[in-house]
Amino acid sequence: MDVGIPSTAGPMVKAEGVHKRFGRHEVLKGVNLEVATGEVCCVIGPSGSGKSTFLRCINHLEKIDNGRLWVDGQLVGYVQRGEKLYERKPRDVAAQRREIGMVFQQFNLFPHMTALENVMEAPVRVRRETRATAREHGVRLLDRVGLASHLDKYPTQLSGGQQQRVAIARALAMRPKLMLFDEPTSALDPELVGEVLDVMRQLALDGMTMVVVTHEMGFARDVGDTVVFMDDGAVIESGNPQDVLANPRHERTRAFLQRVLSPTPKPS
Image (cartoon, rainbow, N blue to C red; front, side):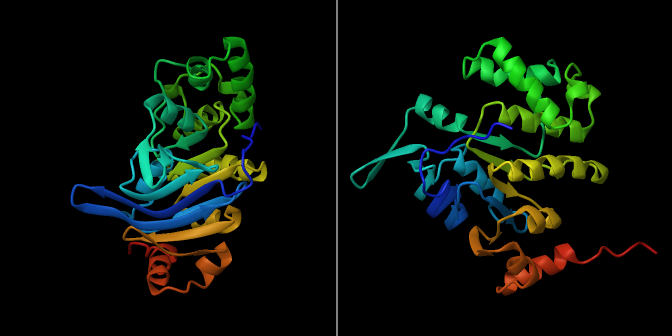
């Protein structure tokens, strides 16, 4: 598996006092967070806590209102001169975004393209790779995610889990240094979740830096190097998965975990 090579020895992701508003609604209220190179950071929390918004800020799909956000030592979306921030030109933002892979809840594959064509599209159009190079790399990636026999199938011919694995391969085709996952299994039937999580586990073993917004507590416990609990737009606590999930310090974390980990009563 090709893993992006970071250019600095510092944290891959660093957020300082990140705020984000939509109109009068403040979604992020001063988020502070660091993710080391090669680390898997799992972000958990209730719906509406700001997890997905924070993830979208990391690759500047959403602009922050206050604070600072760095990826691999570079301010995301801005340059700083003196005490002032100036927004980067669109082409410079696009160049930064090329280094950050993102996998969404929905697969968003091109329906008129095969699995391989979906994986080849961005390297050819954005990175200007030759079709031969992009095809060779795409075949390797689809083999890596267990889809070597599905290269020529269209999205409608694939299960949800298979489509999400194509989406992961598509993100990896850009050779990112950082991968962001926004609840990548939430749109899948329960029996298909495992095949996607297995691919993500292997990515972690390969050393890919990952920030994963997830409700899969088993994955967070077994694969995460750090678990971050967010609520109401802020990081409430973070630390080793065993500590956060088994012995949380904050009452809000305990209440959340009690809800999500309690078995669902069977209908009588």
